[in-house]
Amino acid sequence: MKLAVNRSQRELWANSFYKTRQERAVDKVRWDILWDAGWVSLGAIIGALLRYGVTGENLSLGELPVSVLLINILGSFILGVTATATVRLGADPRLTLFVGIGFCGSLTTMSSFAFETASLLDLGKTAVAFADILLNVGASIAAIFLGRAVVMVLMGAV
Image (cartoon, rainbow, N blue to C red; front, side, top):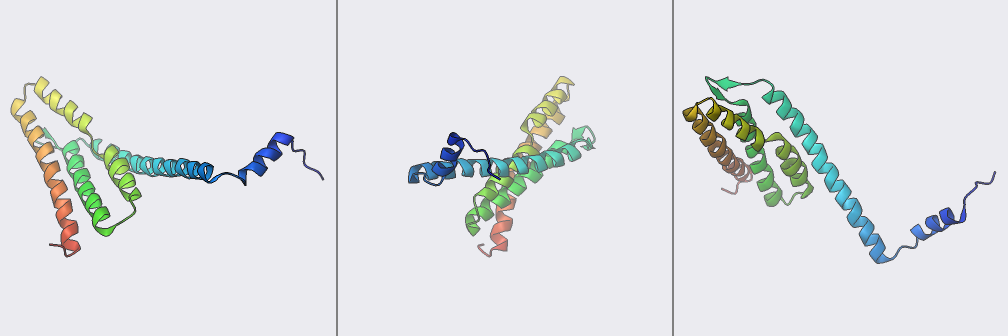
């Protein structure tokens, strides 16, 4: 049985084996970009689902909403660990794409934090709003340093 293949299909198939070095390099870059986008996307899906689960609980300490606060601290800690471990261990930089940009990028939530704080200010709860600001920013920065320190201790670099 003979397959019906037109001339342009045969040429395309044959030419795919005779690409120049530059054409092969361009193809590799395209595939690298797709793989990178895939790692970011996979991390983002997981981070978004975790955020959805935690923020859906509407946790609070008195009037202070803590769901977003916990997510921001957790994400900052994870980012601190990942960024430091990737550099110190010489891990594949795609780990940073997956965890740092994808997972932590969709897990942490500046927009929700800003909305929550603005809502507290709208309700006249200025002191609680400022506590929310200080805790989200301060604790998130502290979590980055804590994540770095954990990696350094585990690696015996301290």
